[in-house]
Image: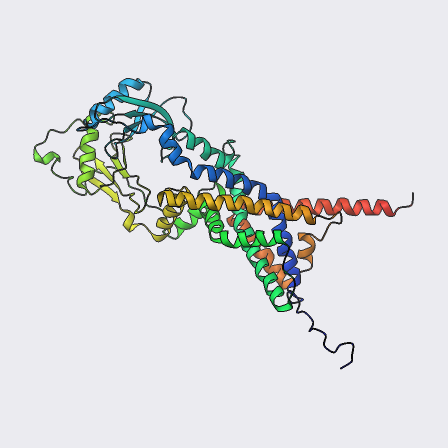
Length: 465
């Protein structure tokens, strides 16, 4: 051994093998593209989600007059409460659902459809169940009946208040979030292995913060991405088709009446001698009988919704709407002529995929585990927003006037087999997640255009004056 090499440290192993280097370059560039181009959308979704997670307690104070009452005593029949609500709102509106007061000190909610309301919107009249006093009248949204503040935040979080076109923003964020998270994990693992094996200096502080925070948030980021995609427009539709094909769709109660009932509803049924009210969908007296039938059938949650029949050949439904833990979302269909149960669904019998979807969505909205769920969501959303800021700061500090090789160059450097597998995987994910696929094509087209402009500029510079 020569004196010049004696005592020299062993040569540091390469970061990855020579065959893997183009793949690593592709991953680095893709991670950068996602951070720079999709990061702002993820940042907005994170901050709006942070505020949304903290709204339940704020709504309790803001809408305390509508939600709560100090009256004590025996509640009036639902029929009386509904009559008061109908008299208050007028004949132009149609009663679409009733949510009885879930516990003493809370109000009953009568929900009406009316001309001029948007899709999934209802007017909710809040009734004191003891005194029949009208406590308020608010516009509510969706099957969950969220109040105005959370409706506004929900619409901003999902679509930036731009309607259906705006939903592309949130789907774009959810489609790429898991790619950024898993890509960051792979990059962290490779760099950490290199540092340990080669004895290299630690990474710059900002990169360490970015990597450490990403690792702590990894499970939450994957959860946000997966649950966000389940109710997105394009990817969510594909997920629904796949679940249906596998027999894992969320079951729904049938309201069709074929003249037969599963079983009499209980002591109030027609064969006991009780005089039943006329089976007309708008008859307020039916609500008490239907609720009693549902209670006898085991619908025992405090929070539930009664929906009248859509026509004379349809059943009424009573559905549990308690999305906390343990989840209560059982439902029954009731023949208003006999008060017999014509169909039912029980959460215990849901397919596993349907249960996971239900729990995932409720956890995403902060309702599954109450305050603990909200605080965890808020911390994860805040961490995600900080993660995006760290990423942009890293890019800003390391930006260079000389453009580095991009995704197209990294793809061209891949071995043929690796290139083929990469293209196949990208196409499959692009089909399953159309917004991801379309945006990837836009990234590549934009990069190709920039490359073309750069080549044209270099050619012009070489030409004699």
